Amino acid sequence: MTIKTKGFVFDLDGVLVDTAKYHYLAWKKFAEEFNYDFTEEENEEFKGVSRKRCLEILLNKVGVEANQDQIDQWLIQKNEDYLSYISEMNPSEVLPGVKDFLDSLKSKGIPMAVGSASKNAVPILEKVELLSYFTDIIDGNKVSKAKPDPEVFVLAAKALHVKAEDTIVFEDAIAGIQAANAAGMLSIGVGDQNVLCEADYNIENFNDITNEFLTELIG
Ligand code: BG6
Ligand code: MG
Image 1 (cartoon, rainbow, N blue to C red):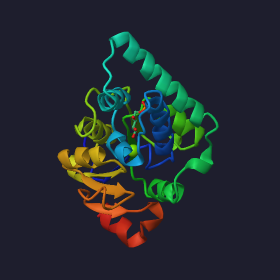
Image 2: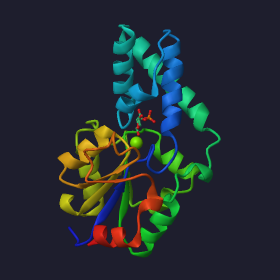
Image 3: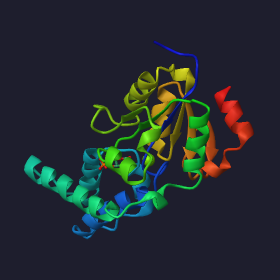
Image 4: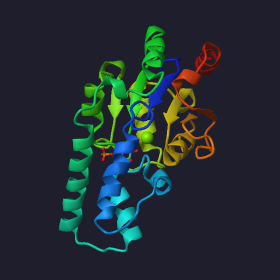
């Protein structure tokens, strides 16, 4: 069934919550074990990308080859470091303007979903008390193809019963903007406009969304 409304889909890390920095810190720590200085600029390429793919890219950078057992071990280690950084997470790490924006969409009856590469999405949303806003969470446990493949957003739109052209995606990753564009959805880049130049619109954070802009988005 397809109903005539807009659907809003949110990436998690770096859009709803301030976790992108913790992913960066965990990879930086990992790279240090190989005496490699992993920079924030390099980290842009890791945003929106699955844990497994991030490790492959990093191993390529440090020039290390490893067998599957070792790779599996490193993936566990990176996640344990990441989880230790976010263990104390609470609603204060919800990014600026997010809560008000979600409340405003909720009051208008607009369906919302999360579309994230993370396998930690549900526990994080629980910790920051945002889980109840979303009709569905399409995360790293449900997709087989990573962004920039559009799969995650296609599944999210399906869960919301909205067509691609009626779906609005918020993303902080280049790969995520490309995924939304490839799906034929409206893409809104959250963060650095220079980095997210392929987005249909750009905002620095959700406080930038005026009532006029929201009305234009809802149509
Ligand atoms: C994305 C992040 O949301 O999730 C990436 O932007 C991260 O940096 C990916 O690698 C996978 O996350 P997790 O929590 O499953 O390791
Ligand atoms: Mg992100």
